[in-house]
Length: 426
Image 1 (cartoon, rainbow, N blue to C red):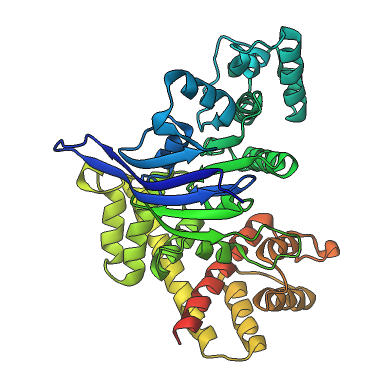
Image 2 (tube, one colour):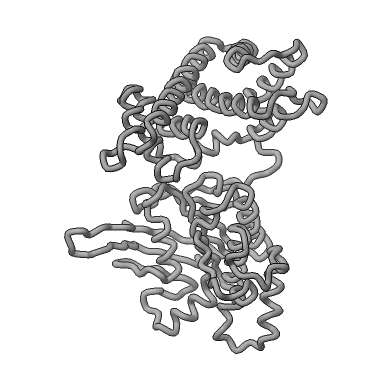
């Protein structure tokens, strides 16, 4: 099968020859085949969106070639580029970019405005897409009257109204909550599955990788690795921790552990701020900075290299991070000395009961041990384990407070992660 997209020796350099020259993409070579769902994945500023924009014809190579459906984007005339944007690629952005003074129906129909298709046919096609995406009842509303998830579904319908060969999605769920993110990602996958349309997705979030056929891991303007992705099944036994390890192959032990720790103590800050915090926590885990230095970093103004948190918040976060790392190291070290799984489970059970002051009956303790045993033998995937833990006693769970169960499950994730690396190192 011939590739639908071929990128050869691509370099994109901004401000070429000037003192502020910056290389956004370095020697990119890749092929994408018809009907593939691929994701460009990596941290902010790694060049993934720039790579997507070169495929979209919104950015042009400084050197190298981008050949899409046997057309080199560098050689397209203005009219050819217009046709390319209408029929070859459909674009979905993080910020939706709907026209505020047009109703939803007209927003979806907008890409057909220069076509010679009869108006009735255009309306019919737009309404069919809107019905498919569950937004047909919103046809007469304006974008400002819709939720973020609804606006993104409108944007996807608009991108598909001309039936392009390729759907390009730049952080399509970056502005959405978890529920709407899941709806939009499943919608994009449904398009891929049913229409065999080629999808190119840009994301920094490992949770967005589940539907990809291949993942291109990017860092500093380059493709570091390409991984064939195993799509999720109901029988999967991979934990979220395993997915995290797979999602960040270029990070070392302490950097990934820092992600898990930060996820447990903080969630309301921006992605970029969290990434910088993770680096600081990784240094703390490695022993390169002390608890006091970590707290000072959280407390410092941004212009001084800190995160400008309130002093009280900085101390709370620093102390919480320190305590989590200390507790996990202690229990993981105890686990390492026991080779027998039953003894390991009993140690973890006792540690968690003591830490969270759980007042359990004998029957609850037994069930807790059974669930832990199944989790540590990977008989229960992480999501299923968490669900069972959170159920009522009569439904097979522990019958504990939901918030307490959530904390315990996070702690178990960290314990399993820490143990995994200690076992690998021994």
